[in-house]
Length: 281
Image (cartoon, rainbow, N blue to C red; front, side, top):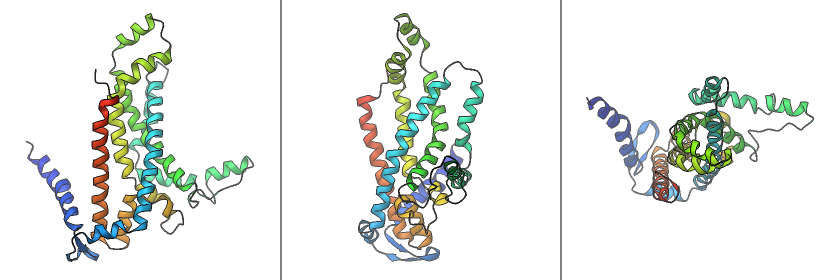
């Protein structure tokens, strides 16, 4: 019964994983030509590559922006949608729609909104008497635009997870708090938030992992010849360009291995730190 799943995991997960590690130790050229074993040369090249370090710094900035904003908005909307209001099912569907929409389509729509020549945002700013901007080609705003799109896409999915966590909390706690005269903020701060920490912990881990792998928004919204590419390129984008634009697949594999190590290290760190703030009681 588990043979099909085992075969799928081996073929599409484990084999590519070990193949990437193997390729990172070889010089892989165009059309997957193996030009020979080079040891840790690709890793040494990566450590001396300023573009790689810039991409890694950009990725950490994405994590610092996208993860907290996605969590805050998802939690806020989940709390609001847990209340008894009219049209609740409609609002849940509306907020969840971005999560099930293709990221390429979402990125294209937002690219049109942020377009510096005929975008909706600039049209609105011009109407209000403000100066139009080249949002996606200006290094001071390009990363912010990508982060906005990523947060907008993330919120619906994690809102559903947090909403399920909130609805799993026993109503008895809230009834006891109401008898004691607790305010809505006190009920949220003293009951909802502590009992929701296991769900929040899961959401944070998944957000960190997905944000470290941010790619489609950058690829679709930022022109690869744009000056802003240097300031918005993520590690995965650097991996993609190294492998498919420059045909340096051995080097790209080393980048992928480094990204795996970073994500694994951060996940282990979060697992260790959960004892200090996650409440399973």
